[in-house]
Structure formats: structure tokens, C-alpha cells
Length: 323
Image 1 (tube, rainbow, N blue to C red):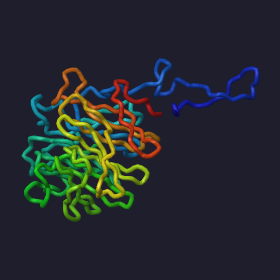
Image 2 (image 1 turned 60 degrees about the vertical axis):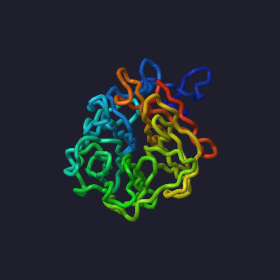
Image 3 (image 1 turned 30 degrees about the vertical axis):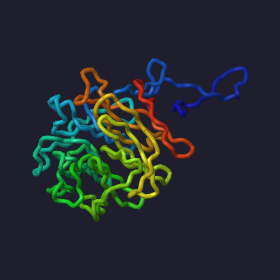
Image 4 (image 1 turned 90 degrees about the vertical axis):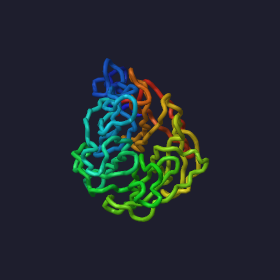
């Protein structure tokens, strides 16, 4: 493993010999040792982490359990944290609220996603369980404003939107085409227009072998293969399937993350941050935590030689500081 420690020359019986000289004085070290994030890695009750790398920094967008009433997921705001080393986290505060959407009933702000394109940041927000809005900003931390003045997707208005169009996740593929994934019990996908503000074709049902999809879709790409992960239920595990196409069909491959001890499981993958991959997920491990007071964690994610994901081990140590 690359610890990020510099090399230097040590004097001795052979002054020409160069050896590794550990330097424990950098920002990733304390008391002579490498620092770790710890899990949960922040002390605020937040959940449903959508993690992305923007401009060399990791941003994690969350639902805000700290501000719900403790009996349901009824917060009306979204929160964010950011870090450049996965150990020192900046609380970016509330980055978007339901008040930004004039059409919202303003009672539930659930699991979001954020993507970047052409210098702007697009926040895909599930609103009140039956619609998805999109807001835009020039900064990854906002302020975000409603981009189109109406829902991007709405139950009852849009054909095949499903019974609960929630949990949006967006993939912008290598060719620039964007895909929006969402839904409970039946996974949905739809292409987006180049500006990310409109649907570009019909909403279609995704095919995932094993038929154990429940919610919390996430799409990634590794070495040319598409990896679709999702929760299997309430409680659920995070499972995944693979395909040669972002539209599927997806062949079930296994479990990414086991049960987390509460009723929901929701995860996202950072594919490459300084050469490593990471899984962000939530559980109820903070003092006072539980089903409606969740907390976010990060552990390293690995692929084997055949491209299969090795099941992530949930740790209290978390991940090593990345210089």
C-alpha cells in the first residue's frame, strides 16, 4: 500500500545507499502513526450518502436525520460534507431545502444525488415520495436553485414513473449520455437530455436477475463494465449486478455490503479517489442512533482479478488518511 511517505537518504556504513525514510510529520500522521477516519466519520445524524469527487475533493450529500422528528424520515433539508483526505471532514451545512421547490408539499426530503457537468452541479432531489426535482448551482455546496420550475419526474403524470419515484442516481457515461436511475421495488431508468434538465425518451423497467431489488439504486462503471448496486429490502443488504450496457440487463453477482442493523440500507461508491475505491453507507451506530437517527460510514472497496466486488467489511476504524 502506498502510505504517501517520502523517501530520503540515510547515512551509515554505506553512505551511497538510499533507503525509505518514514516522515511522520505530514497532515495524515499524528503521534507517529497514520490517521484513520473512524466510523461513523461525522457526528451529525445524516444518512443516504451520495459520494462524488469534484475537483479533487470528496463531497458526500445526505438526508438530514438530525432535523427530523425522530419518528419518521421527515426532514425537509439536505446536508453535505467534504474532505480532501477522507479523515478531516468539513461540514458544508444545509445545501438545499424543500423550500426551493415551489411545487413541493414540503414534508420529506429523501436520498439525493449530485453530478457535475460543464462547470455546473446538478442536484437530483426526491420530493415528498412522489416526484423528483432538479436544482443547479455553480458550486458543489450551493446555493442550489430549482432549474426547471416543475418536477423532472412525477408519479401519475409520467408514464411508468412507478408507485414511488425516489432515490435518484445519475450516471454520465463516457460518451456524455446521462442516465437517471430511481424507484422502489421495480428499478427504473431513463435517459436525460444533454442539459440534464429533461427526460430524453421513455422510462423503462430494468432487468436484474435474482429479482431481489427493493430501493437505493446506484450505478458505476469499472474497466468498461457497468455495476448496478441496490438495497434488497427492509432490512436489506447491498447487492449488485453487472452488464455491458447502462440499460442492462444486469446479472446478479453478489453482496457488496451486509445488513447494517437498522431498517434501511443505502450506499454509494467512489470509484477512484487518489487510486482507491470506497463505499459510503449508513447505519445507526452513533449514540442515540437507530432507524430514524442514522449515521454515515466509509470503508474501502476492492475488486478481484475478475472484476468481482469483494464484500465490504464494516469497520469502526474506517479508512486511512489519503495524502
